[in-house]
Length: 137
Image (tube, rainbow, N blue to C red; front, top):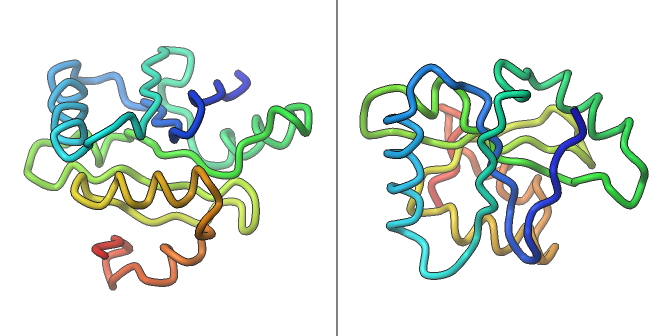
């Protein structure tokens, strides 16, 4: 179950909840609406259904060093739930494996761009998350 690599200068968005295809489509539309360029590599592969954070960390650390990722965004059950807050879960795989924060569609292009070029570290965003664990700028 190796994590797929994202396209160049984009972030991997991995779908882990497969209970509602319409919710997946709505989530993608919400993020693409706020995106003026390609910032995401969207992966909807059923082999990742139900994958949890420890399993994803294990898969990444088991990969060859050149194939490891430093972070991933998850389209988990909460992100796909009904409602206006379809916030992706950002997961650190490198500095503090397992550390997370949520990111709303409006902030995803900035977060993705800065992480993909290593302009800012995962902690720079996670440290600014609010009391709900969400980065809001």
